[in-house]
Structures are given as C-alpha cells and as structure tokens.
Image 1 (cartoon, each protein chain N blue to C red):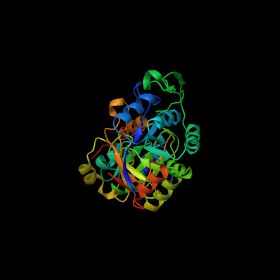
Image 2 (image 1 turned 135 degrees about the horizontal axis):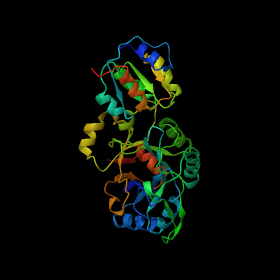
Image 3 (image 1 turned 135 degrees about the vertical axis):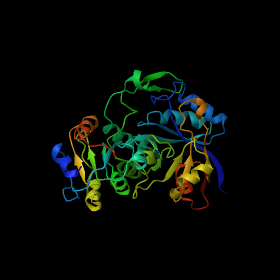
Image 4 (image 1 turned 120 degrees about the vertical axis):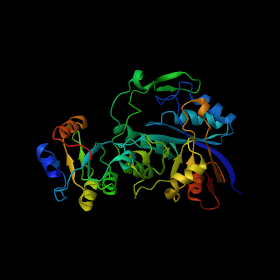
Length: 113
Length: 245
C-alpha cells in the first residue's frame, strides 16, 4: 500500500508536503520509546507515536521508515519539522488516538510484512 | 592539596510520591552521616521544597547538601538540575511549576509530605510531582544552565525515563555536564554500553527512595573543598580536580 493512499483514506495532515509520499508502506509500529522503535521497526514501516522530539527523525532515517504519524493532535517541534524536511521523512498528524488510528490502518488492510 | 569527597548526588525525600515516608530530611542525613558521605544532593521529582531543611540539618553533621531537582521532560526523560544556592534552585522550580500540569492523586502515586527538622508534617504538596512537565529535554538543560546549574542526565542505563531509552540516543547539541549511571550497572558494563559517550563525565549515585538505598552507589570527587564550584571544576577535570567513576 502506498503512503499517499493511506494519507487520503484517513485524512491525515502532511506537515512537510515536500517529502516523498509515494513510498510503499510495508507495515507499521506503535511506540513512544525510541530505543524500542530502533529495535523493532522494519524497513518501510510507518511509525505511530506521540513523541515530537527531534530524535524521531534520526530514528526514522536510521530505520528507513516510510513516515511518522503523530497522533492525538500532537504537532512536531519546530526543529523536528525542519529536520524532517531536510531528511525527507514524511510527518503526518491526526486528531485520532493511536488506538483508533491503528484500527483504521488495519481496516485498510495494512499488515506487517 | 585536593582530597577525596564521597558524593551521593541523587537522593529523594518523602516529598517525592514514590519515596518511602521514612525518607525524612533528618533520617536521610543520619543515614548519610553513618555511611561517611560528604556531599549529597536532594533531588525530588519536580520540586526543591525539601532542600533547605535538609541542608540545615546536614550542616550540623558536616555534610554539604547540593540543591537539586529531578525534572521530568515532555519526552519523559529525567534530568537532574544541581544548583549552587537556593535562589537559583527556586528560580528553576518556578519554571517547572509553571509547566507542570495536574494534581497529585495520593492513592495512585503516593503522598507528597513536607516536614520540618523534627519530622513534624507541615503539609502536602498538591501538584502532580511525578508527572511530565511541558518542557523539552533541550529547554530544560538550557534553563538549568541559565540558572548557573549543572545538568545531569539521570540513570542513562534505565530504559524507562532514561534519555537513551526514551530518545534512542543522546541528541547532539545538548550540553550535559555529566551522565548518571545507576547502581544497576557496574563500571565495566557501563564502559561497554556507553563508550560513545565517554567524552561526557560520568557519575553514579543511589537514586535512593528508601533509607537503605542511600549510598548504594556513590562517586568520589577529588577537589579542594566540598563546594559547588569545586564540583564544577572536578566534572571538567581542571586545576587538579577530578571525578573518579
């Protein structure tokens, strides 16, 4: 499933529209602890979190994630957004909670490969 | 001639909701004195309200008390702020209080008891001291430095509330004065785990929440006197002062 399809289906707001939204999403991982994401997220995964710290971009970049979705109306910190633009990591936001968002991703048919 | 001082720079009191009620300033000082501790920092969660009374009691026993606070960042990273005097520590506390939402629930988190020298209860802190502030790690370190303090990343070997657990690694551009390794991780293992951070000074302390915890891990400071400015020099490793991890 392409990232753009997910954005459209769930009405996610893209904070840095210049980023690559055409990537294939291979699965998703939910965690607010970055050491956990570094250990368990896989190439092409979407990352669902409430963490807005600058380090999320480094972690996403390191793990070659397809994007980050900030839930519960969280917005990226200023330096985080700047880094996301530089590193070409799509950051999306939504008023949904992690639980509701993940339920809908599942409903769209997204599974971890 | 610099001499060695034994320091436990991370001790909670009964004002921290997660601490045992026996952690009164007088009993903490008693215990520290019996262990030969020369310097201790009172570091309650998001408050400095027990520093002064502890310092007064400790003075009579020849122990130096550093004004400290363990601040919980918006990323749920714990950071110790250590200050030269109460005025600086109180300035820090003011900013923390302004950015600390919520009220304590004693049944869920525990009591936050404020006592005097004679262990008489003066009151209860109503704030959600265990909670996260709305301040980021970066801004907390800047604030601590703005009030002339030392910023220490708490228990970096702990997954929960440690900076590496929460943020994956220590972000560039944050100037910690020291990293704290908890009692859980021995020195050899710490070198194995945190080698990439060896350019920042390391300390170890007890993170005591009960009287028995005090002194379970301490750091030796080699310096002229047991003062804050001497500690700053020791952490920098200048003028013959140093820290023995």
